[in-house]
Image (cartoon, rainbow, N blue to C red):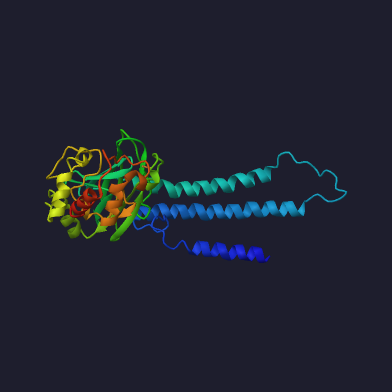
Length: 330
Ligand code: CUA
């Protein structure tokens, strides 16, 4: 008995420890998210009720009609109209209720936004997210900015394998399918930063394929978009200048575009404003000099499977210069 009480206390503590849950699906902050959430609750409570009734009847029958000494075989029943109706009609009614509640949500979720929506292409890569704003000309990675209160029409695509676009606090998942464009509308209601995650197994670094959605005031969003259009900020220190000069010999620009320096690299994220992002390496680390250095020293050690390849290991001096330069790309 004491053992059982101990287990219960430990479980309660474990559950209480789950206070920080950036990827919880249980706190939707949009209308579409709340509509889906209400369906989850409906099915959950209905399922719980069915479970309690069925298990209750089962337990009652197990105890009440258990075999006792001297029992003979009871009367065998084959077919019972009352029972058959009893276990057919209520489940049917329940399923009809679930369907009637679900269908309008499916249609509402599939509704196309108006022409004033912010158009975004979300493109899945192994293992990072590219975000482009075709009407604004902005190209960025792993950090999606959206103005609050305005619908965003997000074209969800992939260049290689199946991924899935998922920001639990905003809406349900939409698959990123190579050769196909799925569209989802998000109307963010709350200012803040929300965690996104690839939700379809896509290879080695699937679990480390994350992104952030930054929902901000329209004016702040406009200013952000405007800054993103600029070419890279020229290096402001001698060390950063050395960093920029290293981009060619180290091969960085073969995969990465840094507008104002080179635009041939399209395999990796656009780095023109990488220093302005809150995270790096598809959001597995906060943006800092220390983490940039860690990343440049050993990308596949930090993110197993990463396609970030260095033609040769960088020296510590080179890393220092590149970090100074990259962090300055605001
Ligand atoms: Cu991309 Cu999992």
